[in-house]
Length: 406
Image (cartoon, rainbow, N blue to C red; front, side, top):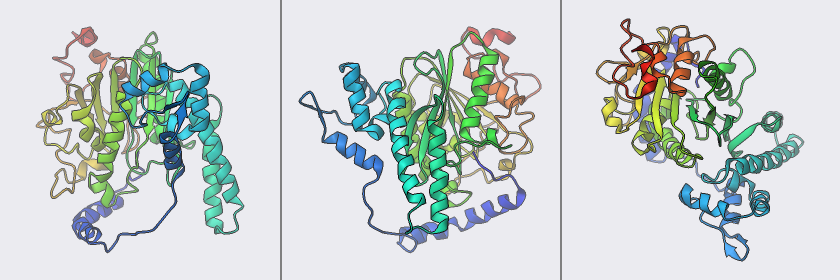
């Protein structure tokens, strides 16, 4: 997701790109580095406690072990034993790829309750400035919102700007799984919007995609993950012009995908800087990932789709009014993100994004972009609408799902 849609902000981005070399040099020599001591975060404390924990007289497994290892561990426990671990180590269990998804939901609900309690206390902490107290109130409200109803929080880190992922639909029973990977300015507070920008935020994106997939194939059981479980760049600065944040995000995204339950096909829908994350993750994606679709991409850190080294189909779209088309599609000394995925030389299957309107409108209901995402999400490749007039972007695909236009 991003909120930068105007040409003045594009000019700022270009200027920052030109100056980025200077700032990177300063950072690497320590001029801009801030070093300070801090205590363990809630996540770190939960993981440390897990690492020293026991159950039935046995040490608990490495929380960072392969998902298959953790899946076998939890399967060996009784329901009460699993619930006990969730109560003792909520953040550790709630973020553990390989743990049963229902247990992760339960653990993260407990973690949210604790985080909300902490922020309630900070609201009345006289040591904080009024602005700090108001920030605590906003965070408390967000944690409360994430706890409301039967929301399925798959990942949570309340530290700092925060990270979170939410499931729409039944992940454990899904026949097709979609993952929405957003871009800059994504954190706990921007994870969901209720105003006119709701479809530019991860929750709105996921809900719109889920509804569109249900319309596209009512008999297909689908689930969509709003995945904001990486530290995204803050605005169009140095971080967004480099791959630093995307590299960590790619590792986290791959870990999520390897820990998903079942073996259902997965499609990634990567918006803006999220497409940089997906590009870096591509070579390590599990085989069940069949599609990588990017919208409003500044590049995927490669010169063509073959360099992604993935068996997944690569799709690209961009609305004609999106300012991102004017960014420098190059990579020099780590700055910039490579070739334009929309170019014919790149080799992606180019989709229509008619109606998307700007940089943040790709998940708006009624747009060709959302409808195309939905058809890909349910595997109905023959129903996608291509950007070119002769509708060739779906041709040459294998499987019965491509037969819709044959």
